[in-house]
Image (cartoon, rainbow, N blue to C red; front, side):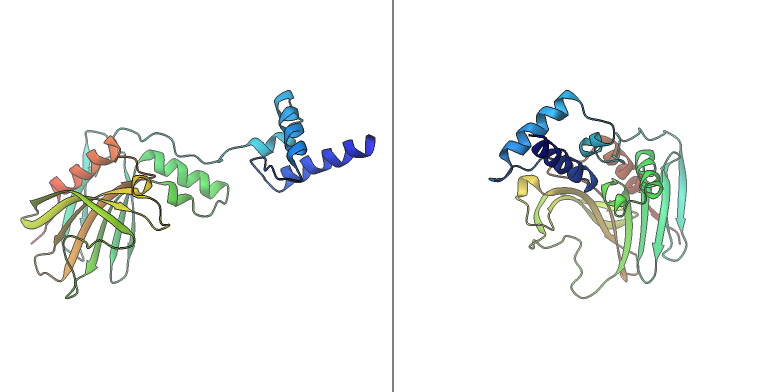
Length: 230
């Protein structure tokens, strides 16, 4: 009996060391899983409770955008737009351009990820993006359906910065998820006045959820203030 007890405790400790956050039951471990659950319910030493720990850097609820705004100017492509003063920006540029507009909840997540040396923490953020890409003969303001773009919804033709534009939603999946579980994107697309580049403004939400009210409000702030500087 003592040997079995030591083997059982060693198995639990091994699960903890490997960072297993759930208990896997198999044909060979049904009894072990049942006993382990009972011990967890009764309370294990602190070092063993690591097995139940959650994501160390969860994204909290989006913080409401301030009513005050500040202007972002992009000199290379000649445009500007407004963002709430409590948002921060990150810019990546080569022959294309991506400006990420981060909510305070995103900044907190990214800082936590950096502190804990977590790779890919940025995938959990919900920014509003402004991107610029060169046009090609195949460039369209509305994307075509594909293996990753599963559906276009709520298509609305409008004018942004005195240019023809479309505002629309897409259901998007990179892993073959069913459409009701696919990520939701809210987008606006327009061409620059010289027709050489396409500007896309967009935000997202995960797992079939609707776009959050905060993200939609900031998206609307960007597109309503977007202007080309002549």
